[in-house]
Image (cartoon, rainbow, N blue to C red; front, side, top):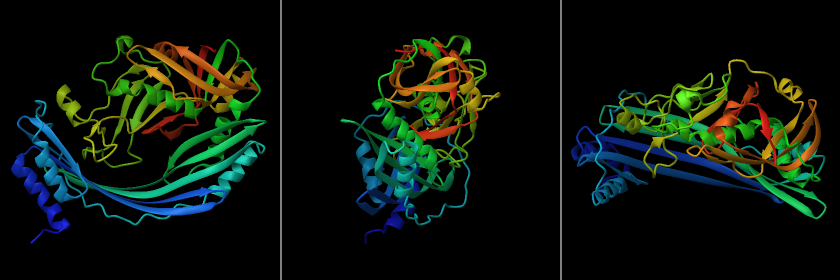
Length: 422
């Protein structure tokens, strides 16, 4: 008689122990979501459910990985994995501990936000920009991690995310932008409308050259994209050569990663915790999963990330952000700009090479003179050495915001000086 899915799931730990005694890990997830896609013509709802299983087993002195959509398929996938020779590598030191199993709660339908966001966008741009499409998804995720060290933990997470699309027109020219957002309760509608409006309308403004040199004020979304671009520094086992004696950024700049508001543990069952990466401009920490920790003889920092159950966990940011011990208000930073540019929206993703110490950021924004906005800047570019950019950070503000890039990256308004604009 064929076993039921529940019986196959219950048998998995024992089967893994037979294959790799004391050297296995089992991950499972169950996700459910509702998505509402709205346009001016109406909206539609779609329901999705996904189940995923993944296992790592250290056989023949190396890890083998397999993933499937059911426990039975996972055992077959592990058998297939034996055809490939693994790299020689000892198993990590497994975390242990147990907790009450996480329970699934049905996903709620996402709210109707199209009309509210559409009105806010029209108001923010004086009718120059309209909302053309809004996809909002609300889902719940149940995860469980078990291993040969006796670990058995689970957690349930719920969040709301989506993508808003807006179109701006000026004469015969048009601009379309898409902006992703993520939250636990719901998006900040006024802030999202401003981001959409700036990203869509600024590139259509009458050409105005930025000053050739001056202060550079970064909107939180631009600062977060910059931080996401330099994030590989914090997972590298050897920092780039240009980080001499740990000096990474200006003395008043800090960076931390703290996923505790979002999840109890990472994709390997290691408890989430705050990790300080940059303190007073000095590189003081890194992000490690179990395998990176094993190689370096250090404990995991709780940053084994699983973008999908179909891939093995790897070290990566989970909720990374800029911080400072002496924040200033956005109004104070704006008032301090004598002659410069406020970067409001990215034209394209930042191009950052942490190894070669280079960066290039193209953006749309607003020229600032004596602390006041003067004229739109449809397009500007700043490029140069990444090391110089980070060490020219003069101040960080109080308005920390997070963005999905694709991991959560956060930044406040940032003042950089001096900068050269093209």
